[in-house]
Length: 298
Ligand code: UTP
Image 1 (tube, helix red, strand yellow):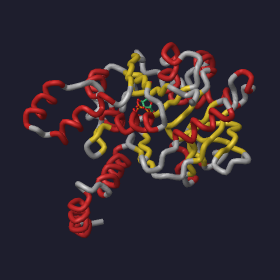
Image 2 (spheres, protein in one colour; image 1 turned 90 degrees about the vertical axis):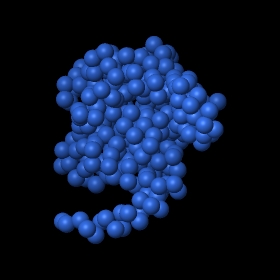
Image 3 (cartoon, helix red, strand yellow; image 1 turned 180 degrees about the vertical axis):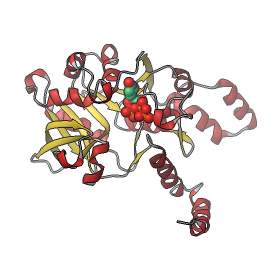
Image 4 (cartoon, helix red, strand yellow; image 1 turned 90 degrees about the horizontal axis):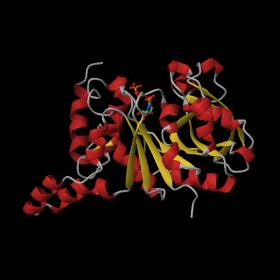
């Protein structure tokens, strides 16, 4: 049995890059093809053996709660029509996991959102999954991260190599090799560095397995970049904290398919890439794209 039993999914950000869609709906509820981004994330946690999920919510909690609850009216109508396929789609999200909610109040940053989980998580290691990063279910990584935590203790982040010109969009890790090819020791971290100053081209993506020592550090973390309490700043402290105090950060290298749904252009690309691979929508969409693309003027 793994020591990691709980997942925290922050969903209280303002989602300003997606206005006006995110005015009354959390961006995590935006559909990727026909499923809200956040459902992919919960399914990923469940596939890694975690069935207790805490959402950190903001003012738009309602849509999330409704999505992970039953909709009895809808189920009754579908059942009376004998539409078993759609009935399964309407009820599957309510049966995925034990879901809990806590409010963040003011969205003071991702680090502050994670701190809201302290009471629920208690003195255990836990996973954090961000809805902006959609990991293709065919390339799972969270289970490996949990394994690394169980083996070595400390915290584990997920690293993806990006072109140097793109590193300023991400948190970046300074790393050194370990005896395991897919595991790196993280010696330092910096949030969105200039390409010229970046200590590596390893970008931090939205999956973490954190030691509960992070809570004490987050309480002391002052607002950083963008005036927000940054999780990266707390991880930086953990990287130099001794293992006896819950410190140490390792990075697991992710080389699979991942889609960014937090930014409008990447979101559109993610929807198209996933839809063209689907058995139900793919063939017709591919045919249409082949006809449509040559009509585009540069
Ligand atoms: P982002 O940095 O993408 O911020 O958050 P955002 O507010 O959601 O989006 P933009 O930049 O304004 O468009 C990364 C993750 O952290 C959560 C978000 O919901 C997202 O999953 N978050 C961020 C919180 O839960 N609380 C916060 O105070 C900030």
